Amino acid sequence: MAEPIIHIENVHKHFGRIHALRGVNLDVQVGEVVVILGPSGSGKSTLLRCVNHLEVADSGKIVVDGIPLKTAQNINAVRQEIGIVFQSFNLFPHLTVRDNLTLAQRTVRRRVKEESEKVAMNLLAKVGITEKADCYPAQLSGGQQQRVAIARALAMNPKIMLFDEPTSALDPEMIKEVLDVMLALAKEGMTMLVVSHEMGFARAAATRCIFMDEGQIVEEGPPNTLFTAPRQERTKLFLSKVLQI
Amino acid sequence: MPKQSPFRNLGRLLSGRPASDDKAASTPEEMIFIPGAEPSARLDPWWWLVAAVVAILVLIIVLSPDPYWNILKFVSDGIGITVLLTVVSFVFIILVGLIGGIGRIAKNPVIHLIASLYVEIIRGVPLLVQLIWWYFAAPVAIQAFGKFIHVDAIANYQSNAILLAVVGLVICYGAYMSEIFRAGIESIHKGQMEAARSLGMTYVQSMRYVILPQALRVVLPPVGNEFIMLIKDTSLVSVVAVSDLTRRGREYMAAHFNPIETWTLIALVYLIMTLFSARLIAWLEKRRRYER
Image 1: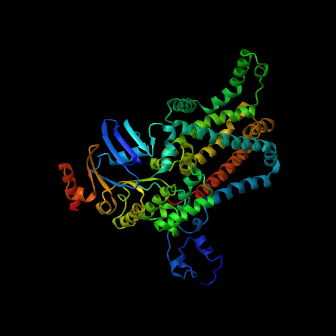
Image 2 (image 1 turned 180 degrees about the vertical axis):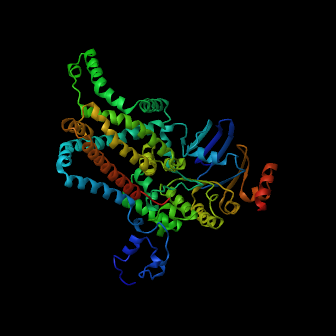
Image 3 (image 1 turned 120 degrees about the vertical axis):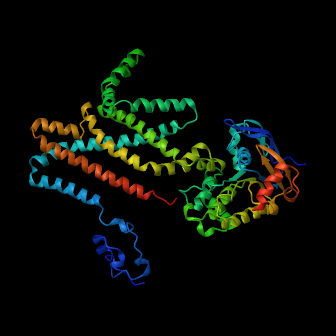
């Protein structure tokens, strides 16, 4: 088997007295789409945020694209390879959509203005909102903002994309437009780590599903196997509640 | 759509009536009237105030040039000093406030301690006492230090009143400004810093391009407030040998014994300076506003 692009080994994380991650092991191969499920407080978002050092693991080992995440010096280099999409979009409200996409390209990738704008417009076309390039984020709907956020992350040409509950803050009718963009991205072969409860997306795009509870990976497998024939009681209980809706 | 007269809104502006009362308001868009949304809300009360203050000033000067015109001529160099002190100090106050504010939120305990000590100590001492300390005590301390290390250039240090006044104002106001900037930076959601950092930007880049532009908009009203307070507080430097507007007023009064005329005129000059500054700040606030 090839060298995994993300290697997580026995990672622990505490928030004060809360033991958020209790020895998590996970390997992600290039091109894999891994969907992480689990009840709230199970540590899924924390795990995701540990991968690009927004949270610092207390112990254990995380290697991204061959770079171990212990030395803080190379953290910016690692972050350039990882795009992250947040639940609350976190677009820069004082910049237009276009500038949201070009800022990091110019400051981090050192691209010239014309090149960065070309990249930005191509990506906006890809997520289907070219006409909003000169708008401010507040003038966009939630679904449009999240698509801009995806485009902003892609503008850095990341090797890995992390999605932290990208549709949880959206109105139901806007969820599909965001999932469609993510689905297209998965089809292109992007390596993706997705925290989400969108079962439809998991079935359509995921190569692997992971169920987490109380800071540990309880069970993993291909989506169809995991959803239809879970082995663990905890997984069954969770899925029965989620799939009922 | 027919070409409309540029004066079509004038009647409405002066009377404050909704647009739907006007004959020109025949198109559907113009039928919608939102209270307070009319252009610049008619004549701003501020303009009336400025007009009144300027009118009074001009009137008293024209009606009795002696003493008012004489006073104004006498103190005019003081006005220059007051403006110079305010503007120069304020530039450095912003710089000190920025550094102090970032220091106050620093994770590094040493930087945090230094910034906090600075703010707490300076806030606890009256500005007048600080200015007097810088003018009378600091030069002596510097000279003693020069003797101690046997450097004649420092031992023979001659104080410069304006320079020391600027130092005193900057250090005192910088402490207050640090707190304003700290609050402004902390008011920006931490997801903004996370988003910037996760794109690979460094801490300095994230501050420069993402956090500070947003924080600046938040802090503009209190920063403007500080500016207006600074204009007035520069009058304190009159006790430490700086010939500002207030000190020149005292000199004129001492020579001519007409306190009512002198101090009324000086009060009016200060008032005009602060009123125009307030307007400038309001304009800046409006310009920096964006959708969120």
